[in-house]
Length: 240
Image (cartoon, rainbow, N blue to C red; front, top):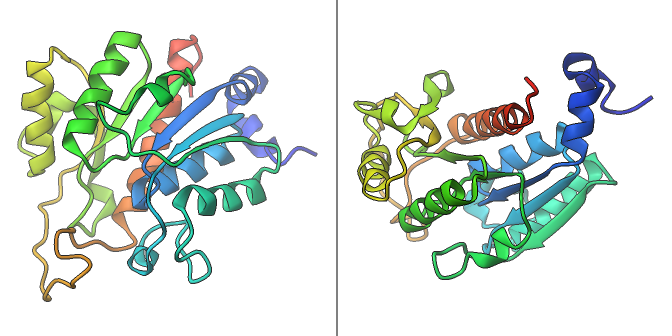
C-alpha cells in the first residue's frame, strides 16, 4: 500500500504521476518556506530544490517546522532534509546553501524547476525572481508579509493587484515595483489582517525582525504550496 494512497484517491493517478515527475524549488526555509516544503513533499513531488543560506536559531522554534531543540545550529537545508527524508525516503532533494540575489541566481534556473515558491524576505530578490520567472515562463507564487499577525483565517491568495488596501507594506512595494518591471500579473499569498505592534521590547537578536507566532507563517506556507501545485497542474491541463 502506497503511503500516498489517500492523496491519489483525491487527485487520481495521472496527477500523482505528474507530481512525482516534477521539480519544485522552495526559496527560504523559515516559518513560511519550511511548511511549504513539507507540504510539497507530502504531496508526492519527486524532486525538491531547497534554497537557504541560514542556520537554525533558537528564536526560530516558535514557528518554524524544522526548528527544534535538536536542530538549533544546523544549516536549515540540512534540518529540512533530515525531516523530509523521514517522510519520503525516496524524495530527491537538491540542497543549495545559497542566498538568492539578482547577482546570484543562475544556480536556481540552471536546475530548471517546474515551479518556484518564494518565501524570501528581501524585496530586491523577490522582484528579480518575479521578473525572471515571467521571462522564463516558470510558475511562481510569492508570499508577502506574515509577521505581526495572529489570524490565519485572514490569509488570501490572488494576483498582486488584489492586495491594494490590505495593509501590508510589502504588498504596496511589490505592486509598484513589479509594474515598473512590466510584470503585470503575479500570484501572491497575503494577509488582510492589520499588522499588530510589538507589545514588549525587542530582543537583541530580533531588533530588526517582525513579531511572529506559530499560527500565520505555517498556514501561509501550506497555502503557498497549495496554490503553487494548482498552477503547476493547470499548466499541464490538469486540475487540483
